Length: 169
Image 1: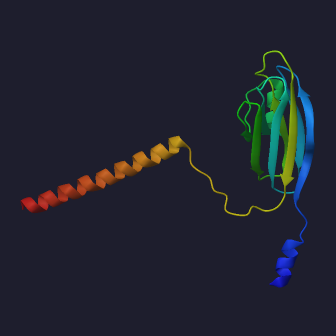
Image 2: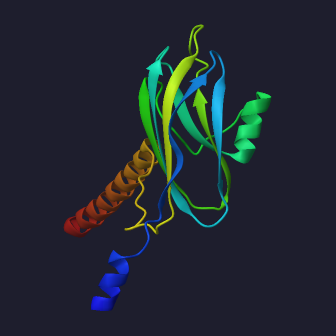
Image 3: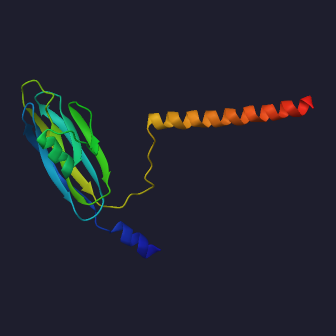
């Protein structure tokens, strides 16, 4: 038991700074990107940005390589995780499949000035500490509630009919 605790205490930190805190310039009506190759195993990607100067209309997004190519070609694309448009933001995502990913700093909403943005990206290869908890979307939640209410009221109606028939006899 003591050996396991010592091993846990002295185990190397699996959180690595992928992109050290640096200021980059993102052109107006354009984006900047950082490629992250997570070819080893699943990892948590933790990235932050703060606009140092320029318009505060920046958004950060994590895309897989295929979606980034679609973005580059101007085609419809998806994203794994994204922040709101603003002067600062934080992105935290558990990448489950090894592969190549891209962090995009989107400044396409700015009027005409480039934005200087301070960016930091950390990658944590340590295993998750607890269960992966997620919520269902509000639309699915509504469907579940409606189906549950329908089944409940159907059972109550059926039972009341049976009881009323039994009482009338």
